[in-house]
Length: 179
Image 1 (cartoon, helix red, strand yellow):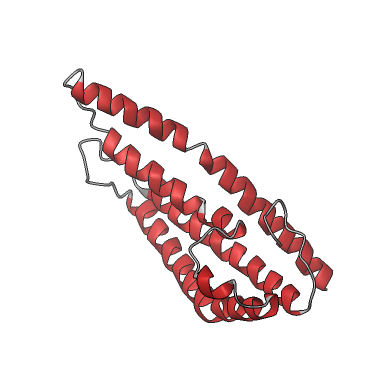
Image 2 (cartoon, one colour):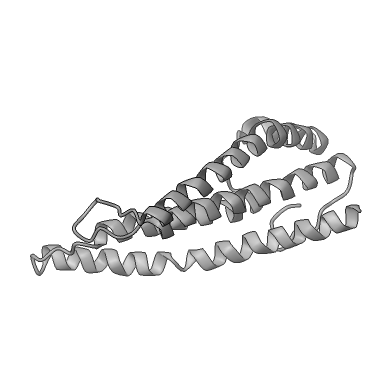
């Protein structure tokens, strides 16, 4: 049974890694669109109607989808000044309690709420209302849900890795740092 769970953890970590690497490429069109907007606005004196919304949607998507990759790589903000003094076992206990008491309930609730948030925008055909471009927003809201769902999955993988650490076992991560 535990070997099946570890297999699932490896698959989750691969998914987190792949989604993080794929979404990293979203920075390129964001940079191009921003440079075009700056050129168009200040050199041609002809600002675009789409660059602002494209920018916040691309940046938001980039950050949301990248959350699971960031957790896998242990790059989210932590209070390391305390945790570096803990033994591996104590760190695992603190991580496990945090994931079970805070992370899982919040991410579970957020995933559920964001699913409804996306469905509402999809069914109604809601538009942004932020500019003359006024794009439909369900794709952006779908990215909200996907990002949090990927983070929730990676959190489940982190729980298993914390349990492994408590059992004195090391976990072979799919390309991640110091596990």
